[in-house]
Length: 212
Image 1 (cartoon, helix red, strand yellow):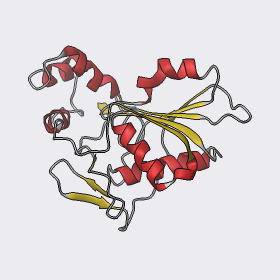
Image 2: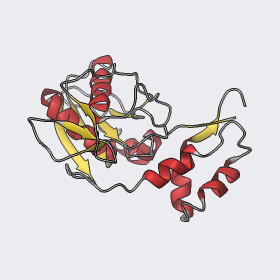
Image 3: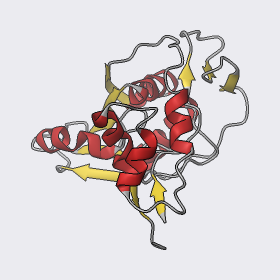
Image 4: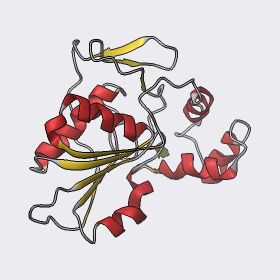
């Protein structure tokens, strides 16, 4: 059997910044989470740790994008790790981190706060790409005292059109329990994802589970 380190659910989506509402929107525009309502408990994120702590220098936290994992940052983390401690988590529902009660930016921010607390880090330099950038924005919005600097890559605090429903559906249709190998998974994705490089990116999280 195989396991896919991306939970096939709708991608979380953050609408225009409105301090008074602070909503996270699902792909179809329905309100998914409000910060005033019940929040899911934070989860322990799978973590890659680079470099060593330096006195007076805040650690760097690198956050990957949708369908990605901590491994996407490996090359950059190794370089930054020469002068900083660098923490690279798998965000919830990605890589080796569980999905918890579902994906939302407030939940991701809570996970990141839990990570900082667990590592005894009072403040960090946070860099996020795409979905990770929005999670980083939410962290800075809700806990600004924990973010020394914020760098957001390839994303803005606006609502984007749905571009991923077909990908999510295609990943959800892969029969992981009976899948023979990566080539079969690649063939199943090909009709929806014709670009081989994109299929390779999506399948980077595919791995054998302990039961086969």
